[in-house]
Image (spheres, rainbow over the protein chains, first blue to last red):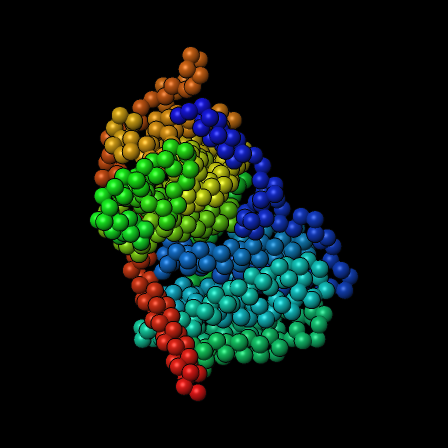
Length: 298
Length: 337
């Protein structure tokens, strides 16, 4: 190699080793070297009920963590590389939301716990996520149908929570809105493709919706369970979220030549800690290394 | 498989026997002046074939390389490490995508390349056939494997083929971030419990030699290197890059407090570089031939994802065709009205 070339390469190596202070914004949220809620004023306003606020953060955090874990299971198994990237992107967004919600929960529930205490050192019965997110992935149709239902409901709720009187939850919700808008769009596009595509894809989408229909009611009811009177705006009630969620679902499914079958609600109350049999093994895997080394720092 | 411009060149040649030598002279001049060859430029078939092979192998390595670490996303022991790992594995899928696109500028087709990977006709980096039994492997892969990849790839940012060189600039930046994160995980673990320190040293012991093998066989035994060097697809020999990696890594190992498992490793004052032992080249041959610890499971996983996803890809294609037909029908209706 000529000495100029070697010098050029050394220059590149050196620049790789330098700090990336300007570039961290392009990396996925929370993967850099700084604290996610750094600089945010974390004092709870007097008008806000701390325990209600903690319950909302925990419920929405658990939904996001468990949904993200299921999306992570798709890694290296997606039908196409573009889907590999998109599903990871969505999983990362939800993981980022869970982390901020847990951090807020720890500040207001009086325990001063960190995000990892919530994720790794609670038993399944202490998790407050809805059953919908803990169901196994099934095929791509089932995962996509679940993503559509979850992101439609979550967007309807968080777009309203962006106006809530707790500034930290409001900021977390405001950051989540564009993310969830993308998740919903991505899922809706695929539901339409699969509903319209081939006989097989249509049949699989129908089967997925039939399997998931019993879990939709818990989600819609849970809005009321988890978001008591801490919301400022008048249109933030359970009914408004229910209407928007069902309205969007009907519209997307109609475009796909599908519908949401009427089925009796499943008998689980995730917000009360009553889960399906699928949550315990999911958490066992998620928590395995952390619990094997409880004294360790990572 | 030849793309349009090459075909055109072949036809020209039928009419004018001097054309090919003029095209070749132009190509040689571009390479000689260290300028870039772009997709529409004429290029010798050997150059095109070599590039497709190298870029495809690189793309396959990114995609197969998601597996050993991807296994740990669901088990990462903190949410921050989970996010870092998830994002890293996602970046690898993105690198695979850019590289397949670069190969497509040479007339290759992604679906066909995937078929070649699955059927074993094209290779991927042998390093990904080793298992990842502990979470420390995630850190050591970042430090060694991404570090070695950077050594290999930084010179490729000056590769003579434009789309490949540009893809490598972006990939190298991301790899360097991954390396930094991997090393930072190890630093944190070394400050942790005795069990964590032991886990790091064990992972270092297992990954060191396979990482040195990532640079390929020794120069005397590397059949494709000479042509790639002449065409400036490749800029340094395997042994030069291996030496560079060792020299970079030794001080990092000291800072970390781990021992590199090579009793012959020592500073050579006269050369101003480190002397080091010889990797077990028969092991590299075995792993490349398909008999590494995880070859079968890596290819089986990729095959299963590809086959399980076939109905999804068919549905997307069918929907797109229906949409196009509907749009055309609407246009006709519009014209009739």
